[in-house]
Image (cartoon, rainbow, N blue to C red):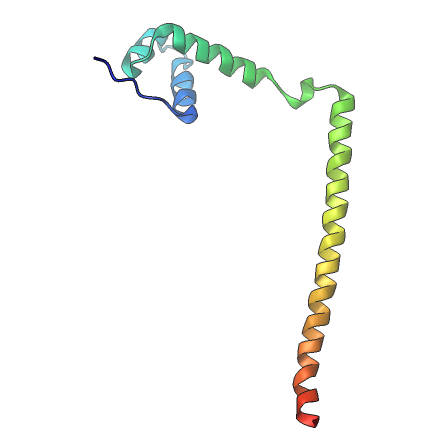
Amino acid sequence: MSTRRRLTLSEKIAIVRESMTPGVVAAHVARRHGIALNVLYYWRKVYREIAATDLADAPDDAVEAELADLHLQVRSLERLLGQRTLEIALLKARLKKEPDDDLTH
């Protein structure tokens, strides 16, 4: 009875990269890691497809829309940071005032 072990994504990527090293025979890598050669070839195909997928391949409209969304997020975060900074400054000023007020009562 054979026990199959599930490989993590990082392990699969490491095996694929090892098999794609110049001068390395894919069959030897597959045998060493106990996986079928056709599985390794499938992983290599998927790896190449993912590596080829790039933001530059995306349509310009999609890139521009994403960029506009990111700019909006930055503005919102800057506004929130400004509000929180003001709140902190006001609270610090109030904390400095309160001990003096307590002494006069």
